[in-house]
Image (cartoon, rainbow, N blue to C red):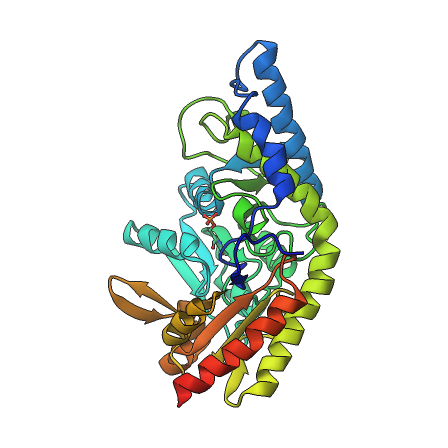
Length: 383
Ligand code: PLP
């Protein structure tokens, strides 16, 4: 099934995802008729509050958590920032953070800002497969470590960190543990019921919900200090009038994701593998970036020797194919991906890397249409 309004072939599902029409349908009444404030005492407000609680339960179900552990936020970035800020606020004697060199900018930039204010940050390295070494983690956690924050799945390569084990090591050494699971939720099964994870972030728009809604899971036994001051919403853990339509939408998206995980690890993985294997067989000088086994089922990050990814992206854009490159444009110049550079790749390899990421809305027919166009574009650029 394709829900795309035009002829584009959308292979950038780690960037964002198409909104599921069932999610829109669930949200609409809360954008129109049911506009009451959930904090109001009258029943027009109370029924809105009930809708929030139903959504909270659906998200808790997806995560194997309790509804009281779900805090609605505005996005994955806010959830990540809130977890780190809380850990540092709780104990002034613990002002050390352990994280990795390949996190999303929502962790990296925060870490860099904190470092400028005197917080010590240990950036764990990764190997050429994009993997951390748990022995490095064990050595990095100290008596004054407030928090270890590691992403569950890398947004560029899809590489999965051994999060359950990392949480156990961190907790055994007395530190709190947070995982940025923005790319993992809905793509692989996650069960927090018996885990050692204290905090976890997710984002609606990676889950076929609109942009601008996220969740911070905070284990009920873990202390959490909000950095927002204001009303008592979200049990005093996140001030600000709730974004009701989006919360309701995220609840629906979570309910659908819980059922769709099998499809994600089956059909979507098959599609990704077919795409990747065909591309590798069609062109020389291609290499898959990152661990091909410990990887999200939907992500394929490939370096294409002799090709600048920016040039390829422009050509593919003309063909209606959406994917993303291994470099980011900051203030007019192209910076090679920090993830691929941390994996020890050359600047050339990083600059020649392209990420294709799939979802349940992609079809085999789309992939068959995209493949010859990609092959032709690469050949043209190489010529
Ligand atoms: N963390 C990861 C791994 C991501 O991929 C993203 C978005 O790309 C974020 C955090 C930020 O999420 P949001 O866009 O909801 O702020």
